[in-house]
Image 1 (cartoon, rainbow, N blue to C red):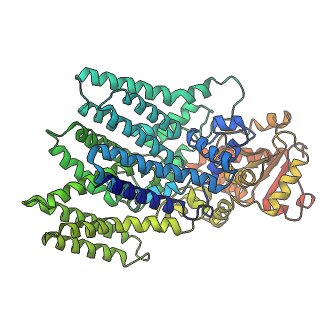
Image 2 (cartoon, rainbow, N blue to C red; image 1 turned 30 degrees about the horizontal axis):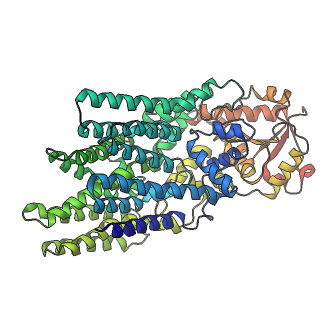
Length: 627
């Protein structure tokens, strides 16, 4: 392949990825929780540094700030629009495809690198996160940059330090999720770098120290900050360490109740991602997102391990890097017993794409030789096509002809291989391999989604089971329809809400308006106004930010006067207070405690005094005037 042909092919892959992920950029809603935080961060320096959700400085989001810093830069350039945030995600996603190509090229050559880039771009869950505003997009890019540095470190050990920097920045993006790739990176350097074993271990130790320093720099600064700062969201004590190693650590891995919403979140997460076990990555919730090429990638690792003796250093490094990345990541995501969402598996996509491409390239070379190895390519195509048939069969009403087309293509590829028409076999075989995931990606690009779906993004035809699970655990069946409408209205400020915030602005000196029940109630105000509106209770209303005991102090200090209680959260509070068992009881205590205090000590403002549509916004309490 000539250099010019390679550049054209790579440009085509990158262009297709940009179109698929950027299609209808301005019409697709984003996760309002993080979008509202970016709006606040673009208006307030403290909110920017601490990843604050609201400009009033009440609470942070449940992730570190790096991904939102990059999104805020996009807003600084283009103004606050959802498409400005989405554009940053698309750019980062396309950059990740390019970096993967460069990493694989150093390992396995230009043809395999192009195939890996294409397979990565056609991974369904990659498309889903790159069309959302979750931090996973930046996380994947940073980890791929770390992988590139490791491949360079085989020739110059100083590059290993930069690998540590990028993994540390990954920690500043999504905390412990970034450390999952560390065994693969360390193994790649250890098995392939020159020098004595002690020298290699010393460089690995140095890079590990750099990783630790960069990872913990922001949490240390937050901890030692001398002045006022927002409460760290999704914790019980406002500690960034509990967020990193509790809510985003132990609670994710093994379950339990470390961090706010622990028991509740573990129940929801397990329901959304399926039960833990060796087949989780193939189950109904996760399989269609990531599993299409997973067996092919795993078999490629096994075959490479059996033939590793005598391989060149870069070849050893590549197989060790991607194999370690995939095996450790798959084990973590398969057996984690706490909070788990299918989109977490986007972190596996680069490794699956790289290993699958290398496996197919190897099988192609064997196809042109004699002996039994020439049947490896047909077997790989048939096995992958059969898995696609199973995955597509889970959505029988969606493109029902596609799964049979995939099988037909696989059969044609086998026939071509038996007839020694190698090029025809490869072209048809690749069509059979990518048809299913490519269809999921295209569907993701063109299908409208609701705001509720952005909280748990997925590719391909949607399943309503996960939505019912979340809503049911939040509200109970009776309030399901109202709660869904409530979340889906996050980007719209109704006439009643406009009247409420205008009324509150006329008389408030601190927080203009506090919205009970968490961030979804505050989202419309933060996304559509510049008013100092704050959520009470963090993400879902469960945080002690503030606690019921804090409210009288806030009122006495003039920090809080008006509290809006959306009608839907009145119903949620009543339902939660009637529960006596289940994970949500302890979590809902802060929410119901604040509601009880507000109802007792604050005076409801008559809707007629606010405006003709005010009643539709909920109940506005004036806590500056005792009942």
